[in-house]
Length: 460
Ligand SMILES: *Cc1c(COP(=O)(O)O)cnc(C)c1O
Image 1 (tube, rainbow, N blue to C red):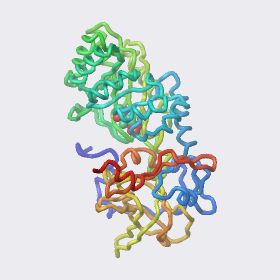
Image 2: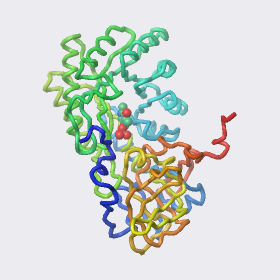
Image 3: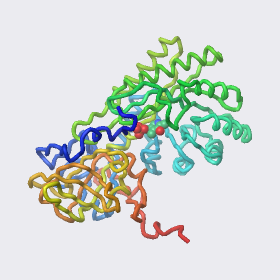
Image 4: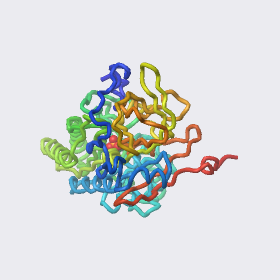
């Protein structure tokens, strides 16, 4: 894999998209249950999610609109809690965080990872227990660390020597003794099927195993009695569909655990293997089964620790995308349709890179359908684009839509629950869309859409 290849972009790297238009699906109306939210179906031709017709959603809440299938997301949270019983599951809040998601996490028994004071504030605002929160980040400010200490978060994952010194000072000042883990760069980088297990040290995250920085961090933390070192952390990539990369990472981390035991006589009780499990965005994508993943990861951790003569540490995993990704759908209205003679048809919708930047950012792939009605028209090779002033403002690069598509039709894009709202912007002064949760035939707003007043707020 190229050093520059991006996780989700690899599949586009070999050939220009124009040279490989996707095969037209036999049935453009199909809602593939492997890709769409668990409750989605077509009723009288129109897509329904959580028992709510998308035409009603558009009428009641407007478009673009982020739609979250509450039953889908909560059942995935429960699946994780059940499959990893005895271990810790911390949802990675950066995938999508709002007060209601935090309430669901609490109800379903999951912990939470935050990566800023803002994410921490969302969790604390609805009374999420601080001891079930882990604070991450490669450049946590003094204010953020102070906030985390005052709140009493369960773990802080330290990422640099500077931070060890900073946190040591603050902990002493506040009379606290936080539990800390060290973010270790194991040299394993994994995306989808491939992983590379070399010395991938050239990145901003973590302390390198290879260069000895991680072992030095252990020394520095153990020298500070106000910090309680409890374990090692590693996060190896994204959209990973098998456990091979985790096995190499676990083996390398365990070797460090042995070294720590030999050098300091300390046996660290916790191991955090991060997240990064894949979901299905397009036809043919694989998504690991949560139960199999849990069994696989636990087996790996016990095996490598037993081999190394260490007690099996408490395992923590940090899924983000797999929890909220599949349950999310974005609804748009078609505005203009432009046929570029001999090439393809550009279908423009009323959102774009401001509500879903993943395609523009790293060539992500998505599935989209005509959602407001079924159609028997011929497939039309299309590109689904937004309304922004960038030609890279693409939502789905290559797809087939029915040839009778018309302005006013609704388009739904699948699997947008993760890293869409959380990466949204106000580019071109577009208000960020509302997020509605749907369940049992009812829709309710969980994050309000922005208004023109919101866009102008704060300007002097
Ligand atoms: C992003 C991130 C995750 C979650 O990754 P997903 O691909 O969404 O599962 C977990 N842990 C850490 C430290 C992360 O940075």
